[in-house]
Amino acid sequence: MAKNSAIRAWLESTKTQGMALGLENTIAIIDHLGISLDKTTIIHVAGSNGKGTLCSLMAASLTLANASNLLFSSPHLCRVEERIRLNGRPTASSNFDDAVSAVEAAAQKLSIKPTFFETTFITAMIIADKFCPKYLILETGLGGRLDATRCAPADLSVLTSITTEHTDILGNDINQIIAEKAAIARPGKPMIVRQMDTPMFNQTILKSASNCAKLELGEADVKADCHFVTIPKEVTALDEAEILARACFEVLSIDASMIADAKAKLNWPARMQVVILETGHRFILDAAHNPSGLVRVKQQLVEQGKFANDDDRLSLIFGTSPQQNLTSMLDEALSICSRFSSAEVFLTKPEGGRYPPVEPDELALFDWQNCRVHVHDDYRTVMEIIINQEPEDVGNILSIGSLYLQGNILSYLGKDSTEELSLLPKQSN
Image (tube, rainbow, N blue to C red; front, side, top):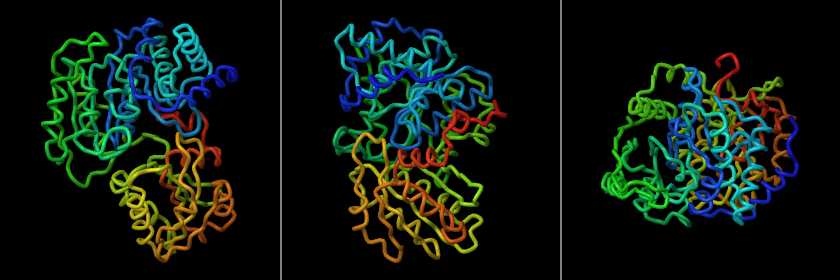
């Protein structure tokens, strides 16, 4: 069904509100709309790395078990409906537009100007209220304590790996960031916590769990019940997600028998995604967006880059939004390139991000050592240059640095249909 251009224009206008942490606007609109999810089990996930993979794996597992579910995640790759997946599939444009219209009407009635993220989260809540899924999985946008998703009455909260990120908003101290994310704990409810070696980690978590009540949400002043989960070293991001998913399902008494099957079939776009064109060009897309995330998947990316690559050549496409540890990110990218006999680097700009991207000329100032470097503002130019060469001349093509860039590339390649953006292949549902 065609999109409602007027409501999409209003949704786009909410981006002018920027990013604002706080619960007041979201609470007011949800209360005004009378949203109730009493019959839905809600799982709320926060963290720096791995939360999206965990959320998608749980949603795929529930879908394979024929348990109705809705997943809210962000950001989106190619189109905004991806943020709201019903049983693994991006919601229909008509459902999305109807829900956004309800948010707009409520916002006008209450004289509130919600942000884009608040609007899409409330949209997800409206759709959940309409379809009454058995399970609702919520991925935190930023932080936790003041993220709009904290307004949902979750039955289980989950913390994945936490690193120093968004320091301009969350603070420079790692334990301050941990406390912000751990504040998604719900009074009297369980919280699964990925164990970390950070000094004072457990104490910080337990302190947050003991003081997690939000009185403005009518929550009782009792502590959350923490369950710490140890992750073995050297496991993949997907293996880690499986361990955490099993812990979540055990706590909620959910049948976990489909997790292994879901893990094997999961299609989580732009996360270690391989796209092979009819021309023979082989793309590897990954959305690791910070140095620690890239470190976790680096070995897998190298292995994928060397697969079916007799000449051991790599073409790296890199573009990124501003980040505090940019040099560290570039160091890791160079480390990947150094594992190949020859590597060419294509520096470009992602489109669609919250912030203006880092200029490719700035990225080119980095010491790329023996790599041949190309600078192009438009990622389309990069794609044309690569695809117009023979596959053996460019080797495997790895794109990293920005989730938005991976979405740009998928759209360019025409890999952005509902089916291709669904968590499970059609035959798996």
